[in-house]
Figure 1: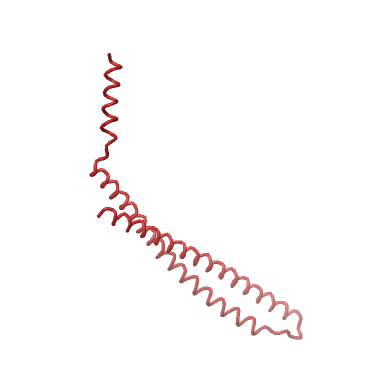
Figure 2: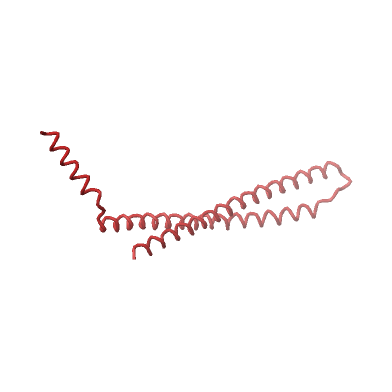
Length: 134
């Protein structure tokens, strides 16, 4: 007898629980919209931080590029081999620093581009949800 009541109650719960309330659907869409808005805001904050980092990297690269240009144009083979070797080492060191700075700039630029693509995707999803709600 208890099993019969249990089965009947479970059947009733399953029958009533399967129906989707329009209000619940609207609330779920609103919840998803808010999640997307939160993600969009955090991505925009990250983008601003990366843009500041990009600006610093560009300034660093510009100064190192100028320094490397001056080193390479001012480099000349002199009659003193020791002086020429030291000058070549200094020039090589500056060129290596410039290469590393350029690589860092490339990585930061790539990160900024990726964040901009993600922001675009999230904005598209968000507008799709907002038009769907209306």
